[in-house]
Image (cartoon, rainbow, N blue to C red):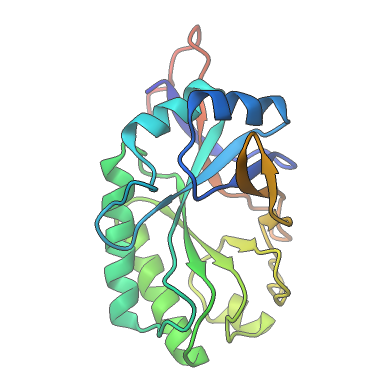
Length: 221
């Protein structure tokens, strides 16, 4: 894999998609101005719609950087610390299994929750701890139905990377968001959610897996 883990570029335009990406689709997305992709892994055994070893290489070969997000359960799911640990460990297993190296930002999809603020915090922090222990850089996507305030998002979650959904959600007090999602649209024959990287108010951005041109050596850490 000719790629390296780097801090994402401020202002970079990309997308998240639940559909596996082919070489021709990636080429069309690059032509449309996309610079990175965010693809899914499961909270259980991998499924056909999930990121694969082949797709990782396809994305990189197209010149797109890559981050990973874990699927969320159907709306109405109940969070807990125990479930957060299990989901975080599975996220690590499934991301590692497709060859994504440690250090890349792995996102937790928080939305559609039927639970208290305390249960949500316990889930998110247990997930973050498991993902961090597995070597990845944890981040949290804040979608609809998250029972947390701006202050709780910042003060009570142990994560330091936040991705804002297109839904109406609170700001993250003090820090803000490192990625902003826009309304879903169709590009290259698939449905995508456009996303933009931004430096948050504490000067941070997420880490992605960035392709290295064939004539450049991959840095050895």
